[in-house]
Image (cartoon, rainbow, N blue to C red; front, side, top):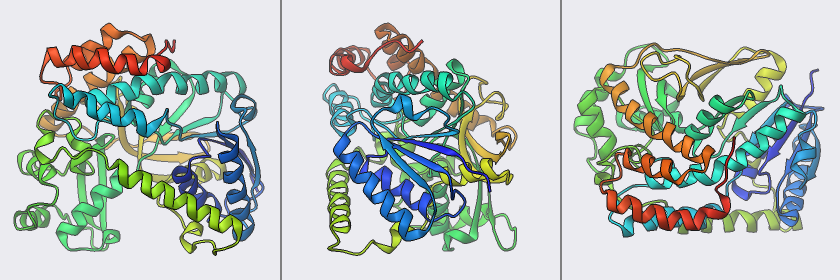
Length: 425
């Protein structure tokens, strides 16, 4: 049986770690393979190692598990590198949200689009390039599997400036499917969707009944008219205007649109996030101390696709993956070649093969191209550590409605993020 070496960057994260562990240890596909857990905080990493060891034993998955804070040495001989790191995530993200609002910018999440998307890019790409430059030396044939945001900008940057094979993975396609299924009144597993576009901004080009093959778009158009108005108002307005279901929720889609705030400006729920993480950490401590049983869901798949991709490549399965973020190169022919797009992919021993669903409807392609232009300029600003380019990226972003506000928020957030901004090439 084929075995491999997997490096998990960001393994000490309670939320990302448990999700990845669920998939690794609910599968028998990787038995005999080596899993190297990498994190910055030695204490948190040691706890993640204990959890992984416990789940490995409980499930009989048969992996060999190691851990280290030395990420460079960990990469030696790796065939798969899973990336799930973030730079001081919640503290800086809150500032990405609050500072633009202080200057009158109305936005939704501030993570993948708008000013927040820019600063996520500026501080994240230097770290990502540290990893991939070391991969180019130590494991040049490894597959880099990115789970971190800003997903499109990371994949775009690596497509332009690295020879490392890369795929980004996101569960947004399933969120979109679940929204559509709810309106149709069907179980989610009954609804089959095919999507293409941008991360968090896919166009469902087909929606079909998995059992009969029937086109469900006509039923969706009828049932949406009378569905509860408070559910996904932005996405539904786009649906009525463009004729296709776009994206995976108003908060995500709204990041890319000048009018996205109309569906709500609540931002990310940091209080819920921190409470959820604290609860997960308490559960981990209780499990490790033996005061509570391992939750049954820890040994069931999470629905993410990283382990599915790894197993397909390792065992040459020719596995269709519903959605992956890849460098375009005309997979979607009417979007720029130099773009990160999200499309179905086929994974096998030869790597990742994007599946083209043909051109997008022209108005939708034009809508998405606006955001691609923003992403391209934001990536250039990050790789060159250029404040001038960063300002230009803000001024072409549809979320930014004031040049005065753009300069003010740029000055403030640049100083906050200065310790993390540096040239990548």
